[in-house]
Length: 70
Image (cartoon, rainbow, N blue to C red; front, side, top):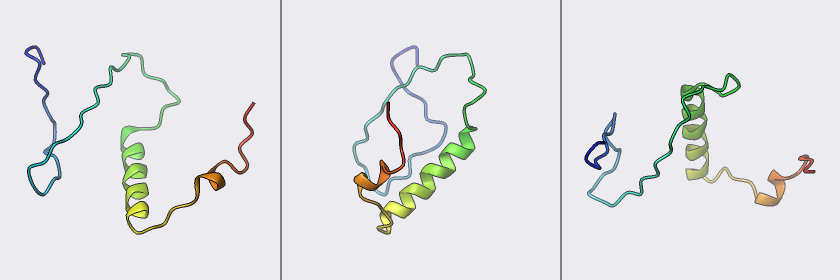
């Protein structure tokens, strides 16, 4: 990235030439031992995306049920 270019480790899964939005996150080099492994997070995101695509969603009001916010 020394010349302002990004390198993708894997190709993007898009069917045609389209614009993408890139969000750059700067990662602290210290690893938090409580963090879930990357593979687990990615699998959870894939599952959630598939559920959303087939309409398996809940109203946002239900997502707050049982959460105690202080």
